[in-house]
Amino acid sequence: MFLYFMLMTTLILFSIANIKGLNSKIILIVLMFMLWCLSTFRALTVGNDTQTYYRLFTHISETHQIALYSYRYEIGYLWLNNIISYLTHNFWIFLSIVNTVIYYAYYRFIERYSKNYGLSVFLFFCLGFWGHTLNIIRVQLALSMMIFAFLSKEKKRWFWCIVFTLLAVSFQRIAIFYILGIFIPKYISKKVYLIAISLAVFLTFFFGKIMVLWAGYFPYFGVYLKSSNYVLGDAKLATVLDFFVKAFVFLLAMYIYYNKKQFENKEKNSDMTLQINMVFVSMLVVLSSLQFNLLDRCAYFFWIFSLALLPNILSHLSLKSNRRILLFTILSLSAAYFLVITIFRSNWNHIYPYASILFQ
Image (cartoon, rainbow, N blue to C red):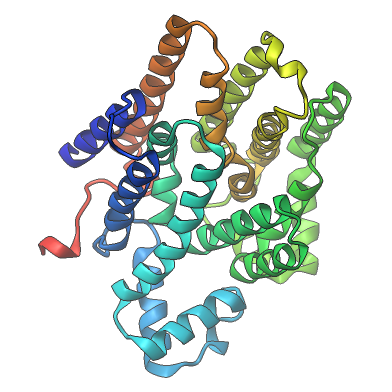
């Protein structure tokens, strides 16, 4: 735990301090590289799924038979394993390649949208994004492709937007859910919010039945219905806590939005309102998944916008004292969230205790 304390302290310092003579992009690169190293050179005991991914890559390296796993894993991820296995049989080199793609995507997103790189990286570490890169590799690869797709869409490069979207789905099927993100507006609409909340409440009560019907047409999802980790009608503590975190961020952003005159320039602040809407969608997705927590993974594709939203709402506070109070609140709650889950619910992601292959 000492490692994590030191890392959080470092990230907090870069969140609150403006160090003269250091380029902010260089700081972002260095901080993300540190987290990349911890994720890449982890021992097999770190992360819930690390050993599973290790066995899969090892077997594909030896046999190159990906058809054996097509019932369980997406074809894109299997082909990625197969291609890299022709280059190396070393699992950690495989991880280094995969993590480079993932962390570069996060870097591009934070560099493009955040006004406080240090705080964004701190949130990346404390709010679970870093832990996910040690666990759900397929989801993270899909998320990275969706980041590239979103950035391409913003630049109106529609061909690459489609290519990256298809790649995302090839790594993780649930990525298709993020196609909805293309249609999320860059403005606040109370009417749309009301309709969306009503739909989420409906899904909260009937999603179990919908999931059973869905699995009948798509047998792949039947695997999750039989898993002890995903239980219909069972609202898990992790999902409930996740909902309250997202609700807090959304309500905080909305409060500042409706109390700041500078938001009257809708075109100038379209990125900000889009980020609010994305976090709003992630909150509703988690609400809908209370009865079946597999769906909460779909929220990852929208929740990533919180990495930019929280630093950006701070920049809209005119009084320095208010900015400091809110920054202290965000840092404290995020650190507490990370420590409580890591220490008292270590089985959720198995990132504690941390071990590295570099020191074995």
